[in-house]
Length: 348
Ligand code: NAD
Image (cartoon, rainbow, N blue to C red; front, side):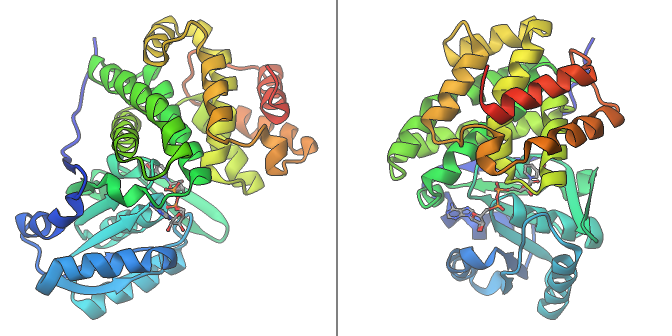
């Protein structure tokens, strides 16, 4: 038996889709929109503001990594000053995270325009950081009402960000394939998403302006993000959450480095997931194919290349062991140490 609970999200996808933002806002009956971005993407926010015309209520370019509460409070003030009845987030997971925080705290509806492959726009998961601690939760109120994917906006995503970000998306699909709440719909999305990203990423990294590869990669990221939104993640996400939180590591790179090692550990205990991934990656050795893809798209060679001190791995293993979660193969402390060791050295 399975239960498939489809999330009610509208997707507008295609080169030039940014031009549709005013229509999307109008469709939702919103009249004053606060546009959210990071400081780096201020020019893009200004472009959206122009496109929104008289529905633009103001901009807030203070989105920051991990959604610090201080940035949410500042954005709430901007919502009040603008008299906004909705927001539009343009950017990666950090900016979309800010829109989710405003939806959670104010009930403000959002339209989002993702410009990375992180996938947050497809999930009801929110995160907020206060006093150095990140809290997360699930609430359908944070789901964007409309997601506008325009691959043209990803041409500017640097190769060094595109590769790891794409592998991060693939990790969502890999874990969805052995999740306790997986369904045939999720499996189909995961297979297609992994296939599209694996096919597109090498070209994306070699030539960021290749429009066909950018479109395929973003489509894969959408499907993998939808897998993340529909299921409960396992050991891989737990490990990366602990590594990122305890050692302050870059999110996408950490996922990209750890994924082949968790796949090697889990897939012998998840034969159906292994079969789907073999098809998606056209290989009979999924962990090796994932490692080869990561190397080809410029993922750093092992956690040590991120500056992780070997002595910290034991603490991370303790943290992962302390909190329960579902995984096809329940790891012992020794297993965790072995996975972390392999990910640190970038060895088999
Ligand atoms: P990010 O949003 O932090 O973006 C990184 C930087 O790249 C920012 O300065 C941004 O402005 C810039 N950038 C984004 N798109 C660009 C483009 N096309 N061209 C040039 N620069 C661009 O990074 P991210 O990887 O998208 O998101 C990571 C965050 O998202 C993490 O905090 C993670 O926890 C969160 N996340 C949440 C969920 C969820 O379901 N809640 C899912 C995935 C990720």
